[in-house]
Amino acid sequence: MYLKNCWYVAAWDREVGEAPFARTLCGVPVVLYRGKSGTVAALEDRCCHRNLPLSMGTIEGEDLRCGYHGLRYDASGQCVEVPGQRQIPPGARVKSFPVIKRWKMLWIWMGDPAKVDESLLPHWEVFDDPRNVNALGNDEKPLHMRCNWQLNNDNLLDLSHVFYVHKNTLGGGGADLPIRTERSQRGVRMSRWIGGTVPTPLFAQYLGMKGGTVDRWQVSDLETPTHCLVDAGFAPTDAGLAPDDLDGRSRYPRLRAFITATPETPSTSFMFYLQARNFAKENVDFNNRVVADFRRVFHEDIAVMEAQQRVNDAMPDAPTVDVNVDAPPLAMRRLLNDLLAAEAGA
Image 1: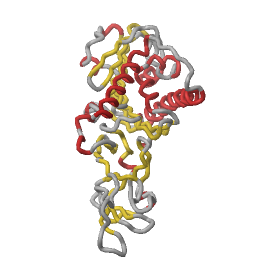
Image 2: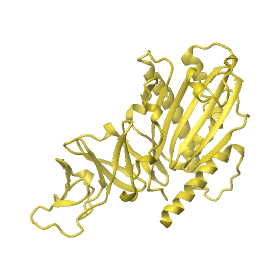
Image 3: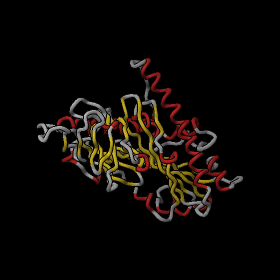
Image 4: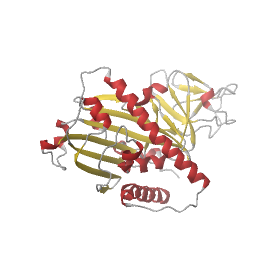
């Protein structure tokens, strides 16, 4: 099951060009197309006549024409023309989905159009902060993952994995330190403070550091259903930065990743991500390095999650145990189950 009355990323804006664009989202075949005005619409990817995918058709003005018998649909999904007859058959329409653009991504509402709520978009306004330098992930193409989307939530809310999966990039000391779990109405936050340790290998390379100790932070702030803001950085140990001084972190090297996973099927999904940093801002070529480095990091994550999915599929009844670091992902799964139950009962 998927939470429907919420926002998912359907595509990067640049993916939807001059031809209809097909993608399966939450198990539903969807076609996105850009009308002559530049507005993007999203419809069920089928003609209501004989179910040919509308993505095999053509764009005409603000409408989409089926490539089989020529029925033409407007952006609301209503059939507005049937070649060879004047009368439009009753019920000649397909479902449409609200779409809005934010952060160069197209967000789609798969649920009840009457319940569309832009306040349920993730709170990623920091990406618009002009004091940061931004990078768009993976050349504005999604990373396809052969795993269930909730495994990505688990991965992002349990950052203890970085000490093992990413030991040469994001690792370092601190795997044995406790985490803090905070719950809200529609999200979960995981945080860990690592005092008196070495910087992560990537930060050390980026900033040319050769020794010294730092105080590091790891924070994952995940909003339902799948939108995560990861905040990571460090200050020199002698700077005296307090663990709860959130504003003070902006004075020191800080990198934030904005990550979301859109379900395709129960066992496949798409990852979309952005990044913002407050260092090396004058280095125009540095963005390419950051994007390349984190593409490798995310591929390391994907390899782990896809391996989990293979075992889950082969051994669905295999027993598992929970440990302390599972508190945030378990809290998120409980929250999603509660929201799914409420949506089903509405």
